[in-house]
Image (cartoon, rainbow, N blue to C red; front, side, top):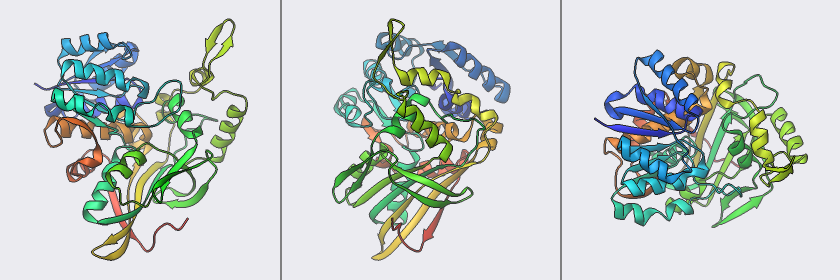
Length: 401
């Protein structure tokens, strides 16, 4: 019987475990672990209520490597699925090395004291994973994750000579709150307020955060303002597709969100530098996270759709070509199926798909890898099967902004 250990009981962890419970032949016995055992138990109860399946739960602080090693040693999983905070990636990878168990995550490692979104810390584990005979799959969410697979799929089937890549992430949903983030507030705000970077003419071009935007008409959502940002998949995609002359990432934000964020920045609430409060150090951004709505609670009230995809331009069979490959996901449909909103769903389902391909041997070899390094076709097939159908359309011309 296969055994799967999932670490992290947030919105993404909840989606992944619910979807794993729908595929018992693949995932077998599932253990959900988190420092918040109450959240684990709530998810386990929901899984039982919805699907009649049972999962085990455990309390775990994933920063404590010896305790993680102990839990892995007792449960003996075939795969550890890390859906905890990105700060914990290296500690969990160390635990997998110590126990000889495969590893998967959805977001690259970040140091707690600096907003750095880079893969080099995890890529440095490659030789050790090869020597141990185990595999790590990095960034098996949507962006990164599906967007990496989309790029590989386009290169394989539609644009063999890729020149430009634009990743467009639109959340057209409405949660009814004055200000809230759709995933972990601390990670979300660190990401949004970091300087923007894109790849052009063989180098990184850096611009101030949220300083450059364009309007784009998203399928099933409509026209939205999208802002140039840096996102971690750009680092791996330009590494594995070196012919790309330009690679950019865009994300939509509403005016109200940006106004609130601007005020919070101006008064120092988004800072990750510690300040003294009543004789103790606190991190303003962590305090802000504590008072903002829990993203997991937004699912009940969120309506609308997300639309995330890639636009790639270049040549195919010697002729100019531009294609747009994307997924549209409905918030209310996600809530009806697994009790979560679409932002968690579009990350949790790809985590489950990546884990499926590792467990069934379709994607499996020793070392540390990003998703675009494997054949994209099996992943794309499972997206259609498990609730993330995709569409591809040919555009008349490349993005000209």
